[in-house]
Image (cartoon, rainbow, N blue to C red):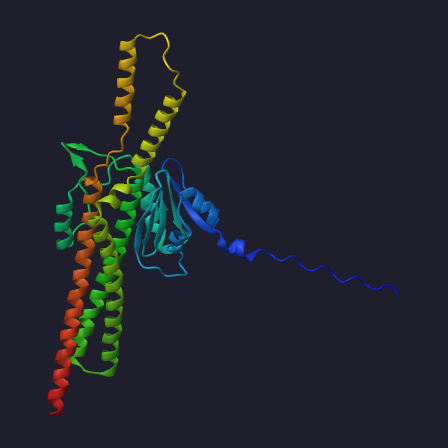
Length: 330
């Protein structure tokens, strides 16, 4: 009697390799956005980032809001906006998130537009924010009446900051509208239900204040660090790198003169020396980036002040309620 052969064992799948691949929306500086599944090593090759920087964008780790400036890329982790920005493209993580719908629409429109980001001034926008007008900061990037075009990486950064500040401000206004009626209700009628409602709102206020404070701290740190802002001009650094490589290639392939007189040799040496001096790296002007970041810093600082005001009123109301209950017991 023939014995049946056991069925072959199923081939084990490489779960680790599949799990390390993430879906990104690749937004190039020129061209249409496309979705791509990229592994960790491929992402590191494209951006020049180490593994520890990629962990900042991992949604499972719940890292706080952070902006990291590196040699070839800027890592943006602001609330649900998680992106890697280079001089030629932006990689947006978790593009299927419904919260990113408006962000992706604005990003595509801003990148496709060759114009500057806005036409107003940062000071005017801060006044509009205090008055409750306008939808987002407008930054003046004009000099001597002529508008300056933002490089690709700063356009993407501006959309990230604008979307984050809008979302946090919207959450603050919604919580503010809910907090004041709840406090009035608790003051007029003391009950366990009203007290629990106020406590729940207070916990949300504290959590939201922490998130807004973190974004504010990141922008303040960026404003205080001129070198970081200088390093964020990725397009200029890339152009300078290409120029120096071309110059060194020309110098290495240049033949030594043989039939020239001494005067021509001196002139040639002077030209080469002048070329080397002109190729020295000059720190880029950071005024446009400084104005951009400062405008959103003013907006997020105003949002934080609103939260502090609501928290203060909530605290005073609770103290007054405690005193009222104490007087009744006496």
